[in-house]
Image (cartoon, rainbow, N blue to C red):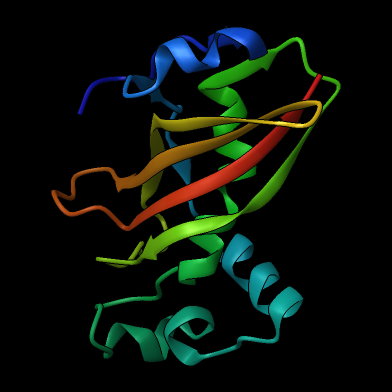
Length: 155
């Protein structure tokens, strides 16, 4: 795993030229118990493996872990730190084509996202972009989350 790279900026009209390229990595982000607790409050998912550190020590992961969807929800925070699309007025989340959570994110560990440009399709007023995302936990060989996210960017 290489260190975080500088933010990559690609113009909307140039996106098709970069399909298949690895865009880069975000900086590392520490996942805290406070963040996990706030996510639990927001979603109503208060399962003990997330919010009860004492009980979680005796659980299957040896401590509390982040919710899988918390990990995924960090994409809008981490992605702008590794890439920007120039020449747009707006970008929106459009959905996911694939999503898996191969390994947990232990609370207190650092997480980052790597992204590759999987596809670009022209839409009215802009482009629909598919990104292959890999969420890595520092020191772990197995990714915590792999997803193909779809965004729409409008000129």
